[in-house]
Image (cartoon, rainbow, N blue to C red; front, side, top):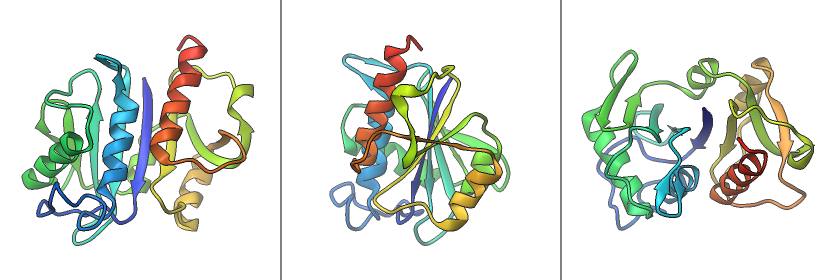
Length: 194
């Protein structure tokens, strides 16, 4: 299973946001939606072996984690509004106090924090410009790739990754959009036959 964890530092945790204003009123939910699509979509198909976690840390009720499972997800189209609408439905359902609940097929909501989410996952890869070149890394196909929205991870979030033994891997010297990073990671793993 290939996993992606995206931290949305400003992504709202209430369902009352407009699908017409994902960058502004929804706290850059557009980035989260693009990351979900980049992690799951192929041309005319979905990646069934992917779980994508969106850790939403915006107001008013952080944290909330919404997980998309590629094998089970339904009603997802390859556009930002579709992914954001499924997040909105999950937020309307509300996160249970413990565990996670399915809001729509293949979409799950929980009150897990970034630390809670990371603690339940293994083989953590922190996408960071100071890491080892991705082309020099042999993957197993069972990794968790961690990246952030338009803001860097905080020192506290980086310390969670350090405690978990995350390996830093770089996509190059330039900084790329988060959703583009996911496309590049999928490409590299596909090239390795994973």
